Length: 236
Image (cartoon, rainbow, N blue to C red; front, side):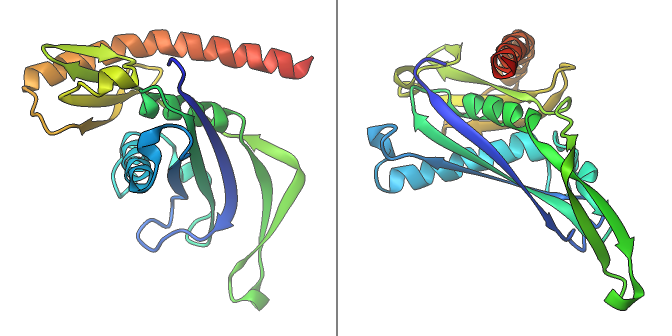
C-alpha cells in the first residue's frame, strides 16, 4: 500500500443494548485523518474525508442498521439479553496517505480485533437492584475476539477504461469512480460501497467484484503471514 500508514485501536465498554435490538451489542467506527498526513487533510478536507472513510467502513463491516449482514457478529457481544452488552469503539488514524486508505484501514482493524481480548464477565441478578444485573468483570481472564468473519476490503479504482487495485494517491486523482468490496476468508461478499460521480454499467461492477474476490484471497495470505511474523517477534 505504498507510503500509506494507518493505526487502528479497539476499546470495549459495558453498555446496554438498544430496545430495537436487545440481542445485539454495538460497534462504532470512527476515522481521523491527521492534518500532517497530506496537504488535502488541512481544514475541512480532513473532516470530509474522515466522515467518508467512517461511513465506508461501516457499510462494509457492519451491514445494515438492523445488524443484518454484519461482518462482526454483534450477537457475540451480548452479556445479558436486553440488559448488558459490550460496546466496541473502533478508531482509525491516518498517519500518512499515499492512496487506498479504505483497504489499509480495514486491514488494520482486522488485525486490531485479532489482538482484542474481551474480559470474562460473571453476571448475577439481584432483586434488590430491580432486576438489573450485577456484573463482575475479570482482570485476569479474557476471551479472544473471533475475527474469522471479519473481511478485508479490496478497492478497484476506475481510470479511463481500466480499473486499478491498490491505487496510489496520484492514480486516485485521475479516477472517475471507485468500488470497494469487502470479502471474507470464504470468498463471500460482505459489503460494497462506491465513490465518485461517474456511473458504472452493472456488468463492470460484477467484473470488479470477481476481481476483488480473487485479489482478496492473496491479500489474506499476505496479511496472515505478516501477523504471524509480528506475533513471533512479540514472543521473543
